[in-house]
Image (tube, rainbow, N blue to C red; front, side, top):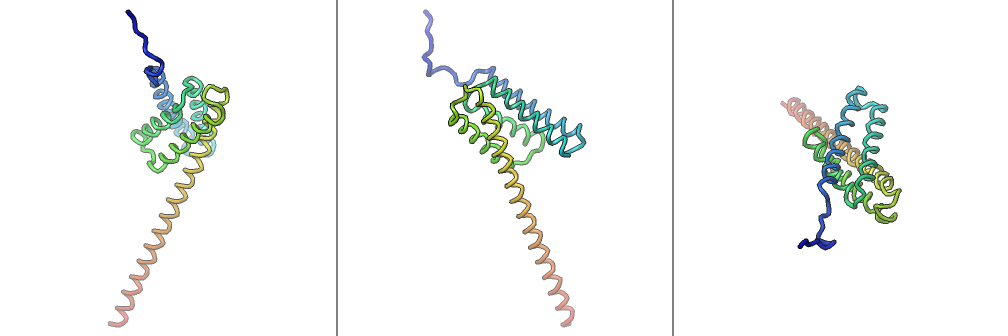
Length: 170
């Protein structure tokens, strides 16, 4: 006697899909790294090529695994690879996650994951939001560092002036 599982008991993710997500995340990071190294660093040409390959691999993945949360899982795996293996910055993780979640939301609002434009919408929103938030994080970090450096210089200058006044008094 064979029993079939009801539809609601079936697994959400098949192993093939999880392997595809992991392979695409690793391939995207590795290809981005190789393009940056082959291009001689982070010049505009290699940056454009790196982003083009990364975005293309995301669109192909979302076409092959058309399920909700694929982009978010890809982003988490990609950021883990970036942080743990490539020395990526943890400050960019919230921006990438926000971009992925908003990309998923826009896919749902535009008709669902099975529409032909869904991968394009998801990746477009992901790229735009994550890049804008990353620029904000970098600008905030730069402003904080600049402010701290200026405060340190002011404090150091004040201390030196006080020492000179003490010397003059003696």
